[in-house]
Amino acid sequence: MQLNRLDHVNVKTANLEQMIKWYEDVLGMTSGARPPFPFPGAWMYAGEYPVVHLVGVDSEPAGHDPRLEHFALSATGYASFLENLDTRNIDYKVVQVPGIDVTQVNVFDIDGNHIHIDFQSQET
Image (cartoon, rainbow, N blue to C red; front, side):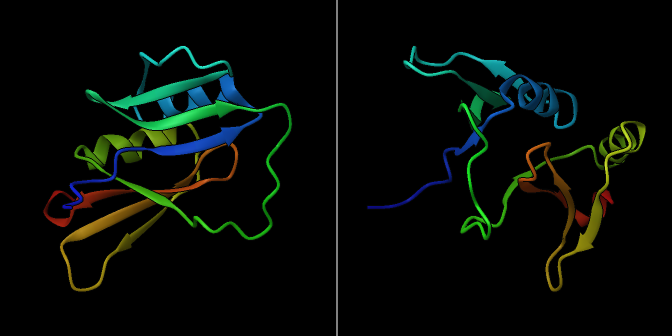
């Protein structure tokens, strides 16, 4: 067997509509086609790939020390992304990854999930 790439991340949320809007407005993803599962949710697309699957739940999932600390997405458009975050007053932290040409922009969605967006350092 040969693994190729991470297909998607599944995120439970009691704030489905707000999370859809956040992923659209902040990360520029689009809500798209999703199988007719018997529970609420949305598939958030980055280009042609549904990389974040949101699952609507009735109450906030418990998690005091999550096992999944973050997920990361690669991107281009560093300056416009930071401008979008600043315009929306979204806190973020920029980190240059030691030893490789990647700059991370660390953000948290409205449910507190840690996401970092990776840019090639020559763009930053």
